[in-house]
Length: 193
Picture 1 (cartoon, helix red, strand yellow):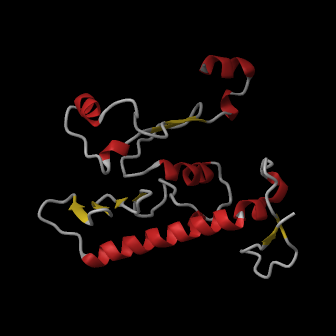
Picture 2 (cartoon, rainbow, N blue to C red):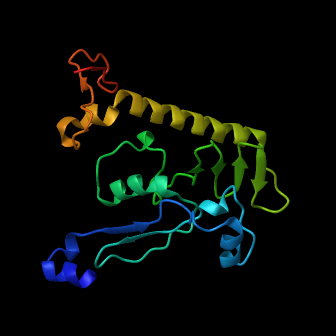
């Protein structure tokens, strides 16, 4: 409860972030559609969610552009004034000037102007009578390809541990440690312990 944070004297130093990490698995699409009052699109709308960020005394703001759970970390990093490289995150700071881009694990995407469903290559433009040019689809598909490649590289090289070292929580399986011979400081080389 918020009153307990006040009593403990930490309310002003506390940020609360509330969001769900998935749609309600226990409900069928039909049940979710009934609750929504219309048939839910299972490619994109099924994953629609909300995020609430609260800190005592903050000015309320509603973000009405497309965003996803992947955007939470870069958004919080910005709000906390942390030094971070936004290119290393799959998401983006929702308060930045970047064009909104929602990324799905199957490489589908959604923006403020339309969506692309990879499995069927189905394009949906949100403006009546307009079409999404093939160059735009290729542009966003290339962005996704690059983001997935960078993400894979970060995991394979244990990039964050190489960057932050012992400032990360210990891994129960004793991860590899960076070597001194790393030729590119932005891409550490790892060896087994």
